[in-house]
Image 1 (cartoon, rainbow, N blue to C red):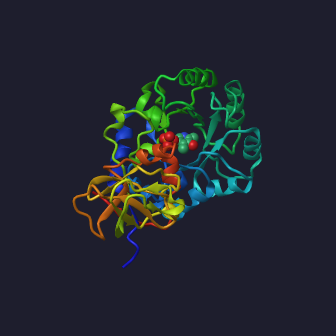
Image 2: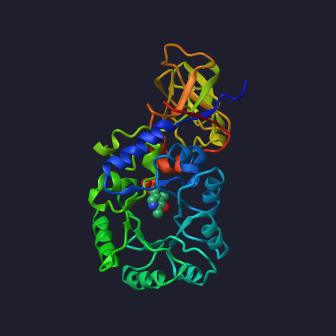
Image 3: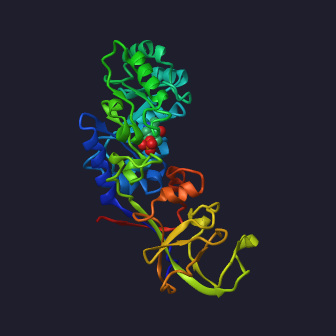
Length: 361
Ligand SMILES: *Cc1c(COP(=O)(O)O)cnc(C)c1O
């Protein structure tokens, strides 16, 4: 018997979530963002599951793009951060990777590259995130320079990224929309703005291309309920099993450092999952896990290979019972919040140790 720790990924849920993104923005093309191993879900299976739906994918590096190409994905793949070195431009040309150009070095490298076929380019505009991209006022001249180059395809996309789209009606989002208007003034170029939060919550930010990531995996980017996020289906279920049970008395402690102490006669279930699998070590006692469909509180520090759970209030529990750490009935956002972080981080920090099992239901 193998260690029962597994990540079950429902590829039909990914497809349904992708379709929701398309339905909410019918005038836009929907690029599937599958960086960071598809937010921990497995980039190749996720990209394949979307292959008959998505016109293009977005990733963070040429390694991530190459992995998809070698797996047989044929759509264009946008490198969201552009090329990191000159030799990546030739790889992009050979593989139909699209390149973000977001600084003068990337622009010069592209203009001076020795390529035979023109490359599809997206101009990254800094409308207020102040992390990457050109100032809006620089865009018209930059666009003209790139358009004049034989190295660059027609149809340069002008792109920007929101800093606060997860907070509805944030004034920075309004400001970013205004600066995008400055950047594109007088240009007949296709544009791209919306991440998941803007796709779901700011229809006025929909453009030729939207770029949803987290919502494809069934997670809401918002910290509060939003009607458009309601139909999202969590795609991943992280699960394991009860591997040991014991009764402890009042005053006994559980786990490393003895930080959890029984205040009543307590039944402790030990579950085969820990921070070595990506269940965060900082998760506090009291955070729920699901055992036989019922919420039970984590008790004591998360170990590398196991956690301990107070199951005193469960009417029935046995070794081998299934334990769900996150999934459809226990959103990963609950565990993220307990750790003062966001679902994105918890998902991308899952390790390769849990076996990935792909289903379609
Ligand atoms: C990661 C990323 C996205 C997707 O963001 P989500 O919040 O996951 O939808 C979109 N655009 C860029 C440039 C990104 O880096």
